[in-house]
Figure 1 (tube, rainbow, N blue to C red):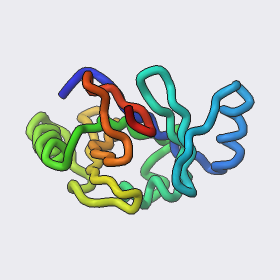
Figure 2: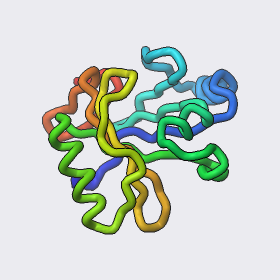
Figure 3: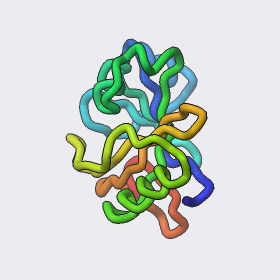
Figure 4: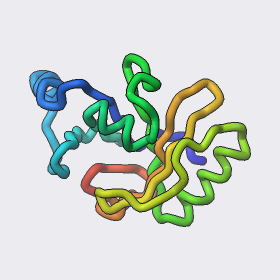
Length: 141
């Protein structure tokens, strides 16, 4: 696993309010599907996703996410790499919360929890191809 974070997703109670907050800081939204707000960062993207939808996507009750719910995403170039890293996560002592599978936005992903409880999304997004160095941008390179 490369030493990087691709996409930081914050579970939020009110998507419009959260987006307005970041926009008030001068951040510019990227084009994204309904129900998701994305802001490209330098080498990363910050995503906002309704907390209830995030809990449902992971397969946990919302209360299990606690306060400040977030996932850290590691994007990969293809589905095989998602499968391989998910296996490696489990072998290293992580807990697989959602096995790799196709998702509504056209990608392929899994969710895993590290030994300290931090949740990672292991993903391939065909709409956002990675740069030659593995760098991620919401809209691709």
